[in-house]
Image 1 (cartoon, each protein chain N blue to C red):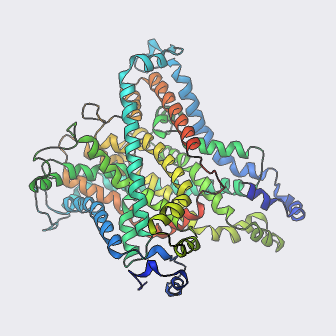
Image 2 (cartoon, one colour):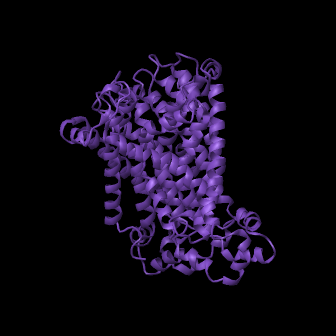
Image 3 (tube, chains in turn cyan, yellow):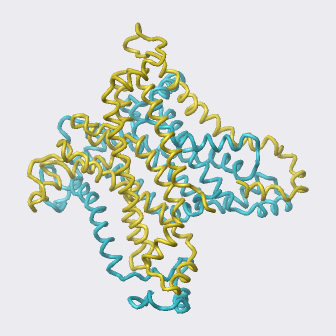
Amino acid sequence: MITKEAAPAAPAPERTAPEPLLPGKKRHRAWDEAPRWQIYLPLGVYLVFTLIPFYWILLFALRPAGSTSLVPWPMTFEHFEKVWTDRSFGTFFYNSVLVGVATLIMTTLVALAGGYALARFDFRIKRGFMLALLCSQFVPGALLLVPLFEIFAELQMINSLGSVIIAETVFQLPLSMILISNFIKNVPYSLEEAAWVDGCNRMRAFLVVVLPLLRPGLIAVGSFAFVHSWNHFLFALMFLNNQEKQTIPVGLNTLMSADSVDLGALAAGGIIAAVPVVIVFAFIQKWLITGFSAGAVKG
Amino acid sequence: MAQAAAVAKPPAPPRRRRASATPRRLPYLLIAPAALLMLGFIAYPVISVFYYSLQEYNPTKPWRNGYAGFDNFVHIFTEDPLFWDTLVFSAKWVFVEVGLQLLFGLALALIVNQTFVGRGLGRALVFSPWAVSGVLTSAIWVLLYNSQTGITRYLADLGIGDYGVSWLSDTSTVFPAAIVADLWRGVPFFAILILADLQSVSKDLYEAAEVDGASRIKQFWHITLPHLKDAIILSTLLRAVWEFNNVDLLYTLTGGGPAGETTTLPLYIANTSVDAHDFGYASALTTVAFVILLFCSMVYLRLSKFGGEK
């Protein structure tokens, strides 16, 4: 890692020497040794672009109403209190958590079952099913709002969180299932067979042998489902009319579309919306990349 | 797939022993929940959209409801300038967004794939907008673009732009303003996917290239880019479809305005069905949008020779 500048011109054998110094299995390759400024300058510029918006919303959330200071000082939490209680963000938060967790569980379980079938069996409708999964990616959820609304009305599920949970799950499923089946394909079948020989039935072999190896993939898929349903807006907007049942994105939209926007409240609401996903993201970031590279495009 | 089959077939004897698990029916049982959900909540709605597209159907004008043949479609193509306007804007939006997201995402992935001090933190920070929703992105950029208190005011202090201009309500600035807001959230998506794929480039290739004296730029063109090709094709396609279909950001950021300047086709459809309750016409528009999307995707996959030259 310390070799630099002259490094790119050095012959290959010398390149391999510093590698064992790296912890874990981090890949390290010859041309990684770009001049430092070529890394830090563009990264710095991009970071400014990424972070200013975050700073801006924090600023509005923390400084008193009417202040034009560029630092959030004196700091106040009045906007948070107002949004949490007066604007019912407490209720929205609870609803969003319910929807997110339920979607995560349903998506993962259903996709796990289907993904296993796709990875381990050949069956007659498999090709057709795969094609349907791919085609469903082109179906715009937003454009099915009307027929979906009619279905949920028929099922008496308008104004119940169940409608949103089902809709979110259904639109998460195809991609999740394709990803999970790729993860399962990466687990050697012989491991499972060895477990059968040892007397496990298929279910037990799966739970004991395969499932632990799927952890990075499942974390990627599950957190995807959570983040998507936490963030998604149109289904909740359409299917939940009762204020008691609404979710955070709908609450944010209400704040934004008010005649005179309360910027402090909007910023505080935005922070409340961001905190869970940012925490989830911070935890899963590493798994996301390994998860994706494992589930990446493979026959 | 062939690979899975190959793995599944050889151990013929043990296969018979797990007859207790009824292997013939097992795969069907396993995909049943997913299949039922998708039949009920994707396939059925899609079919009903096709059905309604041939109907005059408006709950607020029930006396006119009934079979309409291809009237809706004829109207779309001959008498509806809004359809063409929104279609053109959609194409422009998707093309610019996906192009710029890919460009910046690729550059960003290449940068954070290097080894440098603070890489973990750098990655986390650069990727973080990925987790932010369309609505929250709108909220943030509404704050930034606000003519009184937004960053635009401070930029005006520096001589960039004018005071008191709201970038989102000016027809000449709304397009770049919305593009930048969506880029902020969209670039990390590409960066994450491309970075994931970069992990699997064999480093021997680079070493060999270096022995042959290939410059870093050459290595990028001849090793990195070909390796990333399939991932790039697939992620641009998925993203293009997603950008086309997604209405969260524009709906909340500009509402399709000012003066319909930023109305995409899906936004137009949503307005037609939700506000005007013209379900029949909205369904016909949806059908057209769906066909266009499918057609463009096929052409794209064909032209880009996805998965070819193995």
